[in-house]
Image (spheres, rainbow, N blue to C red):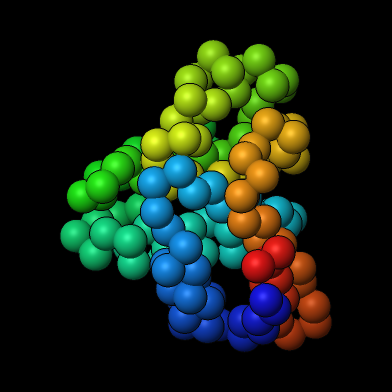
Length: 136
């Protein structure tokens, strides 16, 4: 799947298209440079999964933000500051992947630890738009 986003509203509509894949045990891995819309995309996907969630904040400093869902937790993870795979294990995220809906920004350091069912979403900037593409 490949989408073009010219605005925040476009990014919201694109994120909402991934809602149908959001179920316990599903992982979304978001790749792309700073400022390309990963956190904005995550916010809209989380709010689509649970419309009661009003505020979604970046997990850059906390590494993990947890949100409730009727079936499981929603984990919003930012691996940007992780120095090793061991830190991922120390946080218990490897176990959480099996039971939560997990959205991971900057997953490069732990990519080989992610389930084979992980949906990779790549954000690339072009002159006047962001290209959002995935492996589904």
